[in-house]
Image (cartoon, one colour):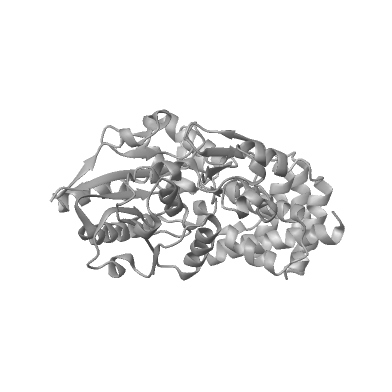
Length: 456
């Protein structure tokens, strides 16, 4: 990597981290915009930037703890670009073994100049040189007397999250959740059997190994292929022909709660970017009986592109608030993948650790209740409302459903065990709810799902 490219990649990483933490946007969105403004970046450069940004977000609290002992002023008083340069540089030194420490320091110092704070170059240089020595020990908070501070720093989570989970969970589950949520997640594909593989190939795993050098393994869930690295989608004929979609096993499991016949009318209430709709279609729901809706126009554009790629045609696509759009309509099955705090997918979006607040969970719960109440009127008698969220927070899951059932005695929970593959039945609670905490031994996302049947 040349000096120019070396400092440029770090400057982009600093900019991305600054955009995420000061503008409250997702890291992948920030990177997408920055990459678009630097079209000559190589794939390797982008991967390097991704690792610096996502890694710094995963270990932000630990980076800040180190900095708090290095500086003679408050770390929070620094210009965000300077603070993020120190985080990016420290992450390289501590976690990226293949990066020479000299390069981590010098290139990050040059990057500080490129992001518009050249006067801070000497400060960044001095601090990162101290960090590179790794010779200073700073006492950690005491695990017994200061458990929240200890776990927050050691596992790099917001203190309010640590305090909440420490109260709610057993110590074993609590520690497992924190440690495993910092692991880099693998991706899973969902095989689309409606579209045959190219070159008369019969096995997707074999095809990806031959054409993309991607190693993979089939999971217990039928059609779920765990991959070691992402294929190059623009060069993968199987992807272009709609032979698979990227979809975590937990999302596939939650969609499998919808047991619909080909003649059933089905609503995917918050559908974009379309993965669960595709799953339902692949499972046998007729495309003409499928209605999808989403509030975000940009995400609906991605949904349409995904539908076109896999060959899903004839669905009704609605834009806007699903309760308003579906007034007077009746469906046998409604899948509500409700807007949520996304606390179950922190490992994929580590910025959630720092951008989410307790009030966000409350606000999501209010919106979920509105959607549940509104859509309850659109379910045919004898039909089902399937509620899912990528969260395990009580307000969005167990408490949400208990509150709904109190207000709607015409509904009851249905045992989902016969809809869940045997391997995953361990995630079904005695209360007939699918409840998956993130950081689980099966390395799948955190999710919650319940089937509600309308009896009258």
